[in-house]
Image (tube, rainbow, N blue to C red; front, top):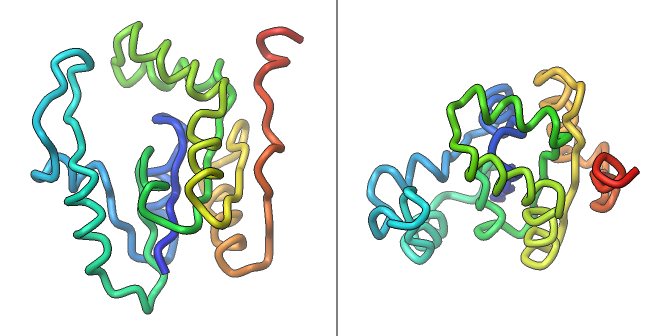
Length: 167
């Protein structure tokens, strides 16, 4: 079974995935390793070859639980766990990574407008949503593990950042 661990860049996907007792496939690493069409001149990032990624992931042994980690991993799984983070915290993380002002704004808007959550709901049969704000990575990893084990269900729609902007 392949489960997407997805969310806006900076929400904790990579850190949490590293704490899980499952095989993890880093989607971004596959893109960097060649599953791309080259650099998008407007955005300055690699343009993922979604077809090549889908073909590669379809060949993986699905008898075991595999975590697909990345901000667009939900395009390749029937089940997604979406990590969310308050925009004011996300902003500081992205600044610390050296993201440009434009890239920070783009990601903050995506988080505030639930872009990845909405995509996951449209593409996946099951979606769980975790607000990672103020939580230790280990605590989030434990929640993810409990979701996968069927001991916890965190339905989408629990997180709403609009009060942060208009409340």
